View: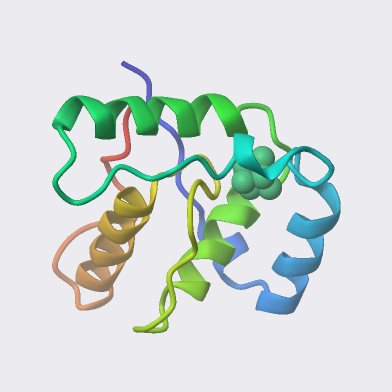
Length: 122
Ligand code: SF4
């Protein structure tokens, strides 16, 4: 089992516009067929296996992307809006993994636990 490192403060401090520009210009997926990065998400009633398969797919799709951390941070910011959902894989994470990371950050912000510890493992 390997861990994926999570965005550090240096990325979180960058303006959203800078992240957006960098991800859009340099992402591994920027000039490829989008279906590879945005496969149909398993629904809420999907099996654990289907969700795990999707998570593994997310890791593989983004492996080696030079803007993975920026992309992940950008998705987290986009999804911070209560009615906005960034569809599919962003920064090597499935949507529910980003939700979990966002909740961890919120807990950390409140002083309850380390922000970027554990968690996202493949
Ligand atoms: S991390 Fe993944 S989704 Fe984000 S720009 Fe890179 S390849 Fe695309």
